[in-house]
Length: 464
Ligand code: 5GP
Ligand code: MG
Image 1 (cartoon, rainbow, N blue to C red):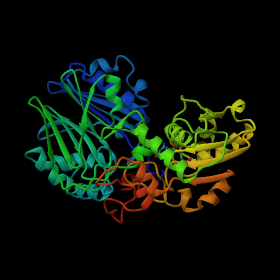
Image 2: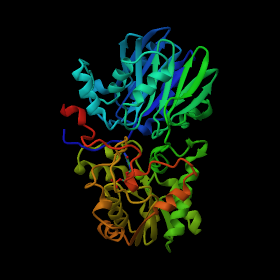
Image 3: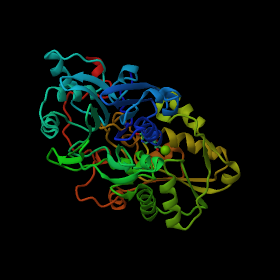
Image 4: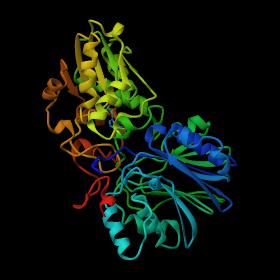
């Protein structure tokens, strides 16, 4: 295992009180496929009998008929995985399912604990046996050692956990949603035909035709049982939702605290145009992740937005490839330039973010070979200097290209005619104004939780 990168995060979804709970979960996971394409799983609860189906692959492949038929019951929990902690083995696929003194319990987790290794070692010393190498199992163990009301149990457990954890859990009688005290990863509440839904993003509600109720707050615990939904704060809160959800990760048709993510991305593009305008024939995006920012940029400058790159949607995300070489090939497989549009033109390429620089380096040469005369790169987020330990796919500091090249040097290396990033303050200005602020540690290095010295990265648990 030589892959020390953090990968992007996951999707979680839960249903309480609908006769087609597993079908709804399947639809939810389908809409949330962008949050993880490695594996998928659903656990259903049929009056206390639990059924589970998990496998590697995309949602539609994992749940080929008749897989869903056996997932009976009116409660269900689902998960799409893109490994954060733990290698991509079948045993690590979520939801995890265990039986303890309170009976069966399953858990689906989005985020990444930064002290999982330390906790796991401590648990093993007291005799705990682990079946997986994911940090999520640590949470299950800690919870199993507590008793009483959920709010007290979460209080006790969260005092031990450091990092990002949005959790959906299910036991015989309850569906439980948890957002960590920083609220790093999202979680929203929905309603459909009298049933309660929990989801990573609101786009899943749209597919189902469900109503969006509200965001779960940082440090909030949601317990849903036959008496309805009960919400309670279980921790002292220091809200720091991940700003990268707005830049890249969430779908643009999802809402962030009721605000359109598409609108925020356009505002970032617009701000970028104000900060770094350029005289060009038109603007193109790197589909699909920078479409909204590119539209905002073009609109602000009053120049056209064109489709200069066509994306093959049937290729997995570039980042899935295990080596840099494969990643390079991945970019070419994924995008094809449209020569008839680009020939002899001065173009602006709006990209949402630069991580390693692989995508843009490749694209610039592709666009040139397709006849583009000038290529101006505009990046709708600031330079990424710091790795993300909370579940994003940011590699070590060394691999983050912004640590090696200043913007003009990077422009040169990429062989662009110019290159500018959105400023840090410009980003915050374009994002919805949140009193509590954001986690923007990848840009600023200010992490909302202290990182333990022994923090070891994605495969930390494998080394034990
Ligand atoms: P680079 O090629 O510079 O390494 O990565 C930048 C590209 O990857 C951008 O097109 C951006 O949309 C995408 N990207 C940014 N962050 C992530 C991430 O955490 N995971 C994945 N899969 N892609 C990302
Ligand atoms: Mg992209």
